[in-house]
Amino acid sequence: MTEGIPIQDRFPPEYAHCFVCGPANPYGFQLASRWDGTAAVATFVPPQWFTGADPDTIPGGLTAALLDCHTAAAGAAAAAQRLGLGPQDRLPRVATARLEVDFRAPTPIRTDLTLRAVVVESEGRKTWVTGELSASGRVTAQAKALIITPKH
Amino acid sequence: MTEGIPIQDRFPPEYAHCFVCGPANPYGFQLASRWDGTAAVATFVPPQWFTGADPDTIPGGLTAALLDCHTAAAGAAAAAQRLGLGPQDRLPRVATARLEVDFRAPTPIRTDLTLRAVVVESEGRKTWVTGELSASGRVTAQAKALIITPKH
Image (cartoon, rainbow over all chains, first blue to last red; front, top):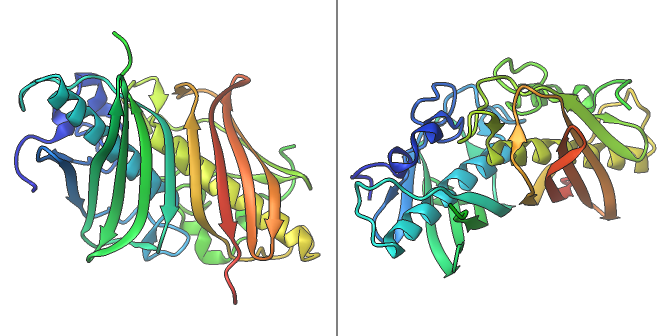
């Protein structure tokens, strides 16, 4: 599911600067995560300058950063759905309180990568989201994130 | 403790490309972590393009990436010390298997940041390292990492 408005385009305007997922930050990944009602999916090819210790991979820490922004996007989209917001409405602000990442294999660069995230639990302002990053169908990193919707 | 040879300069030469900590990657943080025998410390100012959702901060995911490379550096330096290697010797290769990050507060940009990491446990090829990122004495993120020294 890669159609529809990216979740990042529905965040408050200042979020567009985010290095990892902001559409207005030319130095970053410009992650475009899309929500299909049950999962958030993003596909992209990492630019060459994001090399890891092995030049054919991206750093594990950047896979954590990608999983951080993508799980937060999923949490925001799911929170909006619970609030009855429409697909064009601005999303609520969110913040990640905790992120756990298991690195399963090196993540290749210059290759299509896929991020997928689903909500596993929600309670009040807290949403727990699991996410995974894969390359050619092989999962390279898995994450669990606690996403908070701050009080306004 | 910010003197001596950076841990990143003692890694195998290809590690110098790492976006987060490689001294030869001009797009990244070029993290320089130094080991004093018990802790690894790094101080740096994040470049402007690393903005987060709030333009006065860096993204939580990038704080995770910084903690990932810095705890790995600490794990490698500690492993070298256990192996009896000298401060000029090449470090063993390391890989992070798991990273847990608790985000305590926004991490400001255009400010001196400090990373600190210590080894809390080691067993065979596994080393557990805790790390924290702080700005002006305030801890903004804390991490625990499992670092593996792969078989050669």
